[in-house]
Amino acid sequence: MSIKVIGYAAQSATSPVAPFSFERRDPRATDVLIDIEHCGICHSDIHSARNEWGWTRYPFVPGHEIVGRVAAVGKLVGRYQVGDLVGVGCLVDSCRHCDSCLAGLEQYCDNGFTGTYGGEDRIGGTPHPYTFGGYATRITVDERFVLRMPENLDPAAAAPLLCAGITTYSPLRHWNVGAGQKVGIIGLGGLGHMGVKFAHAMGARVVMITTSGAKGADARRLGADEVLLSTDREAMTAAQNSFDFLLNTIPVGHDVDPYMLLLKRDASMVVVGAVEPLKQVNGLHFIFRRRHMAGSLIGGLPETQEMLDFCGKHHITCDIEKIRIDAVNQAYDRTVKGDVKYRFVIDMSSL
Ligand code: NAP
Ligand code: ZN
Ligand code: ZN
Image 1 (cartoon, rainbow, N blue to C red):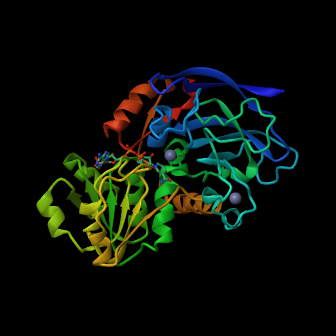
Image 2 (cartoon, rainbow, N blue to C red):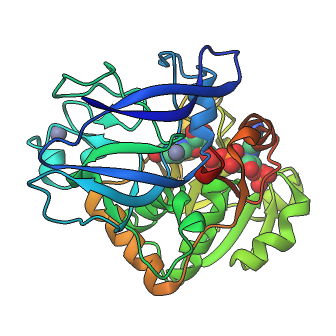
Image 3 (cartoon, protein in one colour):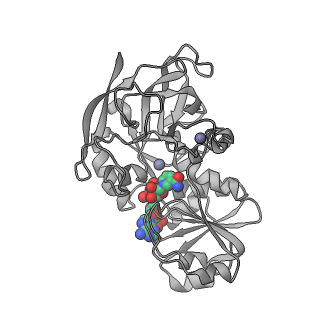
């Protein structure tokens, strides 16, 4: 037996995302079955649907910012009950015994995590050999990879916390961003707008570094103290050697040198956006001021729950445009153009 589901899938790198019927596994003893209410559109969904990273298998069902209500639970599930408001992010399983998994850093599992879409099911016996994401009516997930959503937040506006939220929260925490620091968030999109909100909530002085002058007023409303236009060479030169930390969400390979030069001695830039070759990296800028460049991948389950609880406490949600699922292809095109404030979220009742 399995569960019939309606979703949206891409059938090839060049075809639109379109209606697709498939099956989910019946809940195993530790599984939760979720009725999906909302799912965010991450730029990674677009990179993957269009096979821009070269690892997509078709049919491909995107979606890893999933919020919904528990519809059924397996007999050993202890943490959730039918009706609970829950979330699922980018991970649905991992080996659970390597050093990273034991440290609650399942995203760095030594044996490879199971992604919410395109991941290998570790147990088998499932209707499909690889996982399908959240652009669908329902999903079955092991309770260990299910998050509890704060009930005081709008569930649609909270959905993107499950990827855009944790991807920005985790490096800000890991690199101890806080009061007394000047922090730059590069790129005002889905990730960047959450980076601004979190860095502001953590007490830092926040500078929005953007290619879009028109986004300046919005950046200030989101919590930025200053706006730096990265296309303004004079302003970029004047800002050199002044930042304690940079979070770089640019979604494509780019020349990192102008950004590295913004860092003070010993400061770090963390790249989360460009999951592909960077164009230019001059060693000089690392060597002369002992600067660092690092990367960061989403966040583990404990930290994702911590981030959701932090958002519940501080009333932090994402700025979203809610859409019907039949508008998903236009939403993809608009996201690629940077024309979204600041995350599209699919209302799954439109399916
Ligand atoms: P998004 O909404 O499209 O935002 C990206 C922003 O970057 C744009 O709004 C734009 O902001 C800026 N930008 C775009 N193209 C640029 C260019 N060529 N040069 C300079 N700036 C540019 O994307 P997102 O959903 O935030 O995702 C950002 C990237 O992070 C994607 O590549 C995604 O795959 C990746 N990602 C990584 C992780 C991880 O764990 N590391 C997790 C989720 C997503 P301005 O108009 O302000 O310049
Ligand atoms: Zn994502
Ligand atoms: Zn592991």
